[in-house]
Image (tube, rainbow, N blue to C red; front, side, top):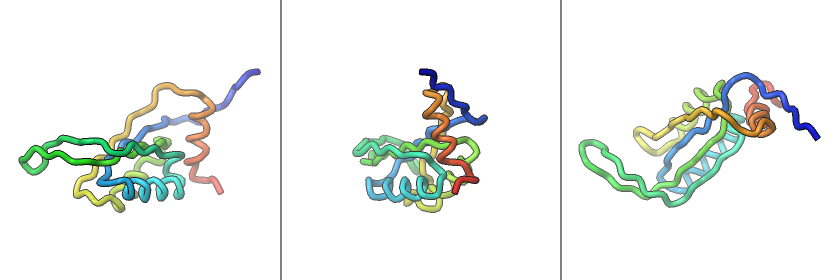
Length: 117
């Protein structure tokens, strides 16, 4: 059986966001998916981040949030995260998906479509 699925033009992005804890990650994820700014979210609990901040090397326990979205929804997603995040400068990094299962990529586009009811 053929699985020919038309994928809308535009890239699918994976957006990486580190959060201070699981509660914050869940709150941001639910808002992003609820507002159709992301099709889905994955939480990776209990990561350790080592980084330089304000001239000092820091170490912090965080939760990694990964959101899947379409490129045309990225700016709105970035604004939502910035407005909800507890950090002064939150990590929000988008990586373009080069390849993926066509039905999945189509689903991401359909779930983040701005004209969806």
